[in-house]
Image (tube, rainbow over all chains, first blue to last red; front, top):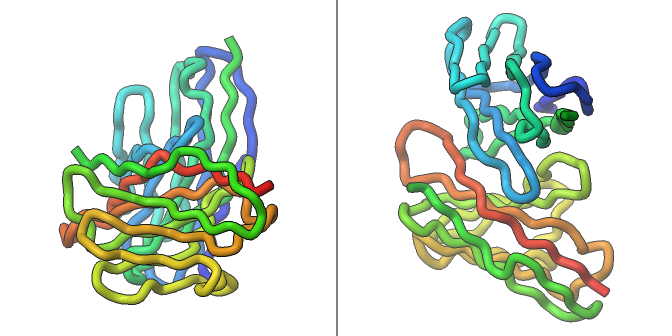
Length: 111
Length: 117
């Protein structure tokens, strides 16, 4: 059975800290891995990763994929209270476009 | 670009009634739309994949007669929760994938919170 596992499930940090969120996966076929940020409503797209070892970066957020070890990490440096959200990892297993989501990591950044 | 809307954003209904939720891609055509359900502090659970002009594909354990999906055009899919019960109360989110681009980038609607009394 295809699955995506995220860790930790929740995390509390203070502003300015750096956090690393983990996502591991087991799927029969793999096309890409996606990261989303969800605040109060729908998830917003952060990154799509398809190749190992190539870091994607957007401001203070960055992500990298390891297809050999079947995991990805999402790094957030110099965290701000606005980074508080649920971060979702999803894998595209090449089955008609559907995504398999992990449980999410709930990040809380305290002032 | 790539905006997806959902309507209504919130609905409260009595047990036994049916509720229709619309998902629209506003500035792109979506051959495929997806319907998810999310419980508080939980991840997204895929319910079904909706393809324009054909029957939806439901995930295991999702009752197709209870959750009716129609994808009548390239910009609109609807989810109807029939004979709703309190256990159907949840946050329903749709996503839309633009017409074939080679990238499975899905754009999510803002969600619909359904409360069944």
